[in-house]
Length: 134
Image (cartoon, rainbow, N blue to C red; front, side, top):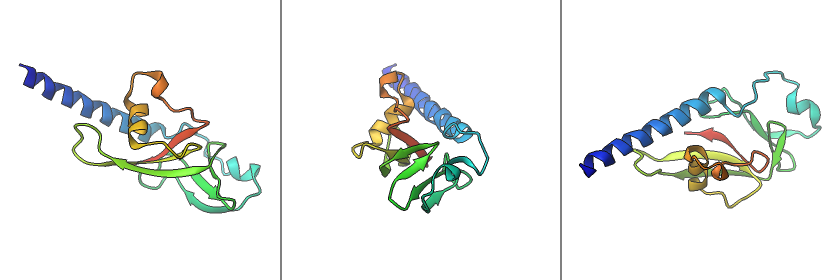
């Protein structure tokens, strides 16, 4: 009987991960403003590297300016971290790209922020935000 319960719990984890991925895909980073005036109008810095929401796996537009600072949703971040790993019971590895002011964010921190019921596990968007997911 315990073995069956374990398989059922595994199915629920996959369901939760699927729902999280679909939710992030539909909602993105939360900015529904499609105006071109956004961040570009508020900064005189040149974009050096940019990623658009219409690209595969990109959840929201973001870019790096000439000074090396990353920008999205009107906020600034010091680091762009590419984190790969495998969640428990996952069939394959996942990849998260986050913008953060903390270079010590881990893959598990990101997974916990998405799946945990504990609000303390969620990221403060002023410090860390998920911008890509595969």
